Image 1 (cartoon, rainbow, N blue to C red):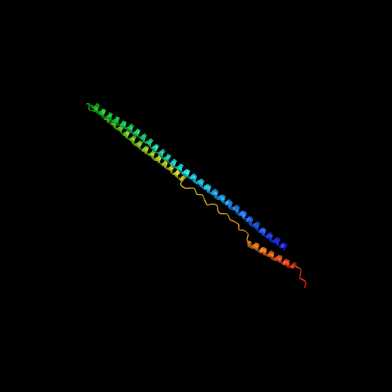
Image 2: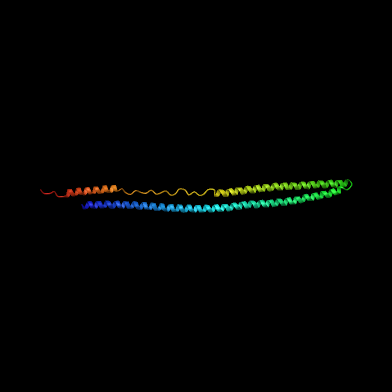
Length: 211
């Protein structure tokens, strides 16, 4: 009977040890999973904060790109106005010179007529050249503005594409696979077997009764 008791105690102790080992292993897996979840949350929050900072910086850079384009356009407009003013003065000088020549043409004689025609011709040439200069200046200004607009648009699009998509954090860490506790059915079966074996041994070792 003592052997039976020891066997049964040994089986119970073994089952408890195996259960404790499984519980410890599962607890470790759950703790690791909890840490992985916390790390995932922290990284996701940091990524979101960085994205918001990038969006704000992008907005600031967009304003700078736009302002730079407007400054360039203002500079081009001022340059064009100066060119127009210079050539307007050139036209005025040509008209004045033509009238002075016309006054000379009012005098009698072939020489006076030639002087008047020459002054009119020179005035026409100077006016034509001034008008041509204004047209070319306008065309060049428009080209520079168009180029500045294209460059600003390209920069603006590049800035936008840098923050066009919010960060994706990926899938969360998968839950760990937990081991099942050892079945108690095996323990009960072992205990029953030990009990039966002990009882059988006890019966076999019992002296027969004397008649």
